[in-house]
Length: 146
Image (cartoon, rainbow, N blue to C red; front, side, top):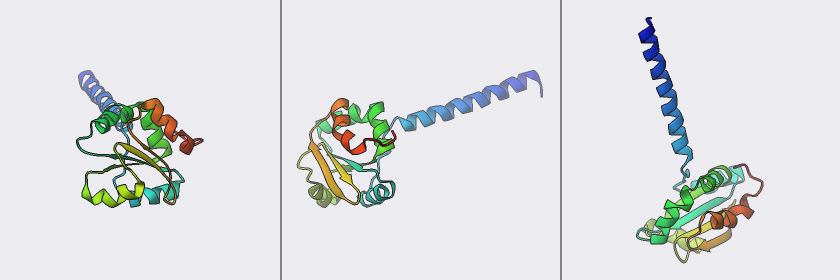
Protein backbone atom coordinates (compact mmCIF):
# COMPACT_ATOMS: atom_id res chain seq x y z
CA UNK A 1 0.00 0.00 0.00
CA UNK A 2 1.40 3.35 -0.97
CA UNK A 3 1.99 6.30 1.30
CA UNK A 4 -1.05 8.18 -0.05
CA UNK A 5 -3.36 5.18 0.40
CA UNK A 6 -2.12 4.69 3.99
CA UNK A 7 -2.72 8.36 4.77
CA UNK A 8 -6.27 8.12 3.39
CA UNK A 9 -6.93 4.91 5.36
CA UNK A 10 -5.57 6.47 8.53
CA UNK A 11 -7.72 9.58 8.02
CA UNK A 12 -10.83 7.47 7.50
CA UNK A 13 -10.09 5.45 10.64
CA UNK A 14 -9.65 8.58 12.75
CA UNK A 15 -12.87 10.04 11.32
CA UNK A 16 -14.77 6.86 12.19
CA UNK A 17 -13.48 6.92 15.78
CA UNK A 18 -14.41 10.59 16.18
CA UNK A 19 -17.87 9.97 14.73
CA UNK A 20 -18.47 7.15 17.22
CA UNK A 21 -17.21 9.27 20.10
CA UNK A 22 -19.53 12.14 19.22
CA UNK A 23 -22.47 9.74 18.97
CA UNK A 24 -21.76 8.38 22.46
CA UNK A 25 -21.42 11.92 23.78
CA UNK A 26 -24.72 12.99 22.20
CA UNK A 27 -26.48 9.95 23.63
CA UNK A 28 -25.02 10.56 27.09
CA UNK A 29 -26.20 14.18 26.98
CA UNK A 30 -29.87 13.14 26.99
CA UNK A 31 -32.02 11.42 29.56
CA UNK A 32 -32.76 7.80 28.67
CA UNK A 33 -36.50 8.11 29.27
CA UNK A 34 -38.56 4.97 29.77
CA UNK A 35 -41.98 5.07 28.14
CA UNK A 36 -43.91 2.52 30.20
CA UNK A 37 -44.70 2.72 33.93
CA UNK A 38 -44.94 -1.04 34.51
CA UNK A 39 -41.59 -1.68 32.82
CA UNK A 40 -39.98 1.18 34.76
CA UNK A 41 -41.25 -0.28 38.05
CA UNK A 42 -39.85 -3.72 37.18
CA UNK A 43 -36.48 -2.17 36.35
CA UNK A 44 -36.57 -0.20 39.61
CA UNK A 45 -37.31 -3.39 41.53
CA UNK A 46 -34.37 -5.20 39.94
CA UNK A 47 -31.93 -2.31 40.34
CA UNK A 48 -33.11 -0.83 43.64
CA UNK A 49 -33.21 2.62 42.03
CA UNK A 50 -36.24 4.90 42.36
CA UNK A 51 -38.40 5.81 39.39
CA UNK A 52 -38.35 9.57 38.77
CA UNK A 53 -41.41 10.50 36.74
CA UNK A 54 -41.79 13.77 34.89
CA UNK A 55 -45.44 14.44 34.07
CA UNK A 56 -45.86 17.01 31.34
CA UNK A 57 -48.53 18.14 28.92
CA UNK A 58 -48.67 19.45 25.39
CA UNK A 59 -49.04 23.21 25.33
CA UNK A 60 -47.56 23.66 28.82
CA UNK A 61 -45.00 26.47 28.70
CA UNK A 62 -43.37 25.52 32.01
CA UNK A 63 -43.08 21.91 30.78
CA UNK A 64 -41.23 23.10 27.68
CA UNK A 65 -38.96 25.27 29.83
CA UNK A 66 -38.20 22.28 32.09
CA UNK A 67 -37.33 20.21 29.00
CA UNK A 68 -35.14 22.91 27.41
CA UNK A 69 -33.22 23.81 30.55
CA UNK A 70 -33.26 21.54 33.59
CA UNK A 71 -33.68 18.21 31.80
CA UNK A 72 -30.80 18.98 29.43
CA UNK A 73 -28.40 20.04 32.19
CA UNK A 74 -25.44 17.60 32.21
CA UNK A 75 -25.56 17.12 35.97
CA UNK A 76 -29.31 16.41 35.95
CA UNK A 77 -28.92 14.03 33.00
CA UNK A 78 -26.10 12.20 34.81
CA UNK A 79 -28.10 11.74 38.01
CA UNK A 80 -31.28 10.68 36.21
CA UNK A 81 -29.47 8.17 33.98
CA UNK A 82 -27.08 6.88 36.65
CA UNK A 83 -29.11 6.78 39.84
CA UNK A 84 -32.78 6.53 38.81
CA UNK A 85 -35.13 4.93 36.35
CA UNK A 86 -36.40 8.03 34.50
CA UNK A 87 -39.91 8.00 33.06
CA UNK A 88 -41.72 10.76 31.18
CA UNK A 89 -45.46 10.71 30.64
CA UNK A 90 -47.82 13.04 28.81
CA UNK A 91 -50.78 14.01 31.02
CA UNK A 92 -52.75 15.12 27.96
CA UNK A 93 -52.68 11.54 26.60
CA UNK A 94 -55.99 9.93 27.59
CA UNK A 95 -54.18 6.61 27.93
CA UNK A 96 -52.27 8.06 30.90
CA UNK A 97 -55.31 9.52 32.69
CA UNK A 98 -55.52 6.79 35.36
CA UNK A 99 -51.75 6.84 35.98
CA UNK A 100 -51.72 10.63 36.34
CA UNK A 101 -54.53 10.35 38.91
CA UNK A 102 -52.72 7.54 40.76
CA UNK A 103 -49.56 9.64 40.90
CA UNK A 104 -51.52 12.58 42.29
CA UNK A 105 -50.12 14.93 39.66
CA UNK A 106 -52.60 17.77 40.09
CA UNK A 107 -50.72 20.06 37.74
CA UNK A 108 -47.90 20.09 35.23
CA UNK A 109 -45.03 19.87 35.14
CA UNK A 110 -44.93 17.43 38.03
CA UNK A 111 -42.04 15.37 39.32
CA UNK A 112 -42.95 12.20 41.20
CA UNK A 113 -40.48 9.87 42.91
CA UNK A 114 -41.63 6.26 43.25
CA UNK A 115 -39.66 3.75 45.30
CA UNK A 116 -39.77 0.08 44.46
CA UNK A 117 -42.24 -1.67 44.54
CA UNK A 118 -44.43 1.32 43.64
CA UNK A 119 -44.71 3.53 46.72
CA UNK A 120 -44.87 7.28 46.01
CA UNK A 121 -42.27 8.91 48.26
CA UNK A 122 -42.29 12.48 46.92
CA UNK A 123 -44.27 14.69 44.60
CA UNK A 124 -43.71 18.23 43.40
CA UNK A 125 -45.75 20.31 40.97
CA UNK A 126 -44.17 23.19 39.10
CA UNK A 127 -41.01 24.15 37.28
CA UNK A 128 -37.68 23.42 38.97
CA UNK A 129 -34.31 24.71 37.82
CA UNK A 130 -31.20 22.52 38.06
CA UNK A 131 -30.52 23.30 41.72
CA UNK A 132 -34.15 22.82 42.73
CA UNK A 133 -34.53 19.59 40.76
CA UNK A 134 -31.35 18.03 42.14
CA UNK A 135 -32.23 19.16 45.66
CA UNK A 136 -35.67 17.59 45.33
CA UNK A 137 -34.47 14.15 44.19
CA UNK A 138 -31.17 14.05 46.14
CA UNK A 139 -32.61 12.39 49.29
CA UNK A 140 -33.84 9.47 47.18
CA UNK A 141 -30.63 8.89 45.21
CA UNK A 142 -28.03 9.58 47.94
CA UNK A 143 -25.17 7.13 47.76
CA UNK A 144 -26.05 5.88 44.29
CA UNK A 145 -23.53 6.07 41.43
CA UNK A 146 -24.04 8.95 39.02
